[in-house]
Image (cartoon, rainbow, N blue to C red; front, side, top):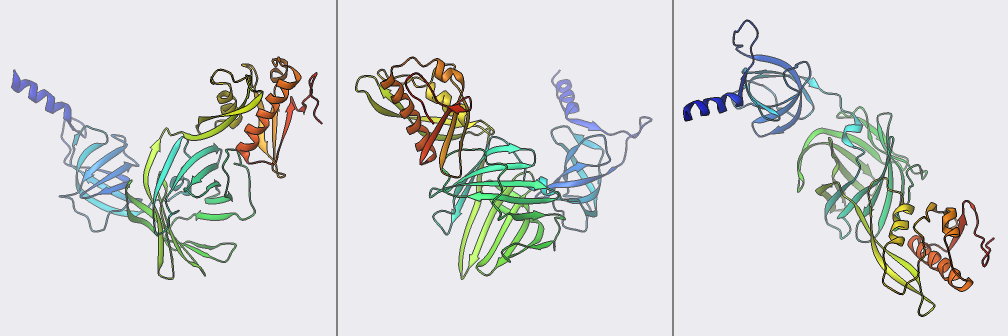
Length: 397
């Protein structure tokens, strides 16, 4: 009984590839692309074989005369026995190099949602930082980079075989959709063909070159086969490493014997970006304004105005007056070139307000303080359905 059970269990783990007519194949051969090299085995993605899409190939007893690396096209010959798992495990007999697979820039800078990257820094107190993907739209990505000293917004575009940083601005402590912005100082970070020797010159005269396409880079987040990009200029040399399916995994900068590096430490999936925001409310007892700090969370492509409005409506301690009713909504929220916050409410904000002149003024001042401080703005322009705010007590021009 036990022997029969063990035999059946083994049979489930082992499948024989048969060529037909009940005969057992001696070997099986197919074309594939190497996705990963790990010790004496390789992970391959099949090209012309329907038996499986991916396989882990044991090369300990295989014949081959080159150094396997990610991105190579190979002809793989294996024994017909397949251990079922994901991916399937097979024993290699022979491996023949057929050339290099075409590398696409889009594969080395994925536009992913709800992900947080943490980089470990060395050589400078601000070399370590966190990156949040705030907005993704079409071929563009907006990131927030937080390094403990400042927060920077960067916008990237993956288009026409190039990765271009289209916009970058520091000291941005608020969250706003800038994904369509261009700053006039666009910089090409990656360029096809992604093969050794491809080079280009940047607007400031620096020279950028693809020097390796499968450089093994060890990071706290794992080992990667990366594209190596070297940028040379009068101030020093920068080396960037991009891994397939991951993006930037390491950067080093050298100048005059000094070296600063930022290395990928971890990647958090399904991540949220958290901010602490100060909200102001009328104090019904003192007729003064009081502030309450609340934590808000953003996911990729969340609208800032909706997140802040919901947080404003959330419960606060007794004695603080209502600022936004249940049906009140912020239709648009932005900071303009004159450092003014433009804040447009729906009709319910005005029609649901049941307050005397003094209390209404406190509500409006609470809103001005909350959003003016959030954006570090000089003033707040408040409208209702696109028109200047006007009630029985207050009229704004």
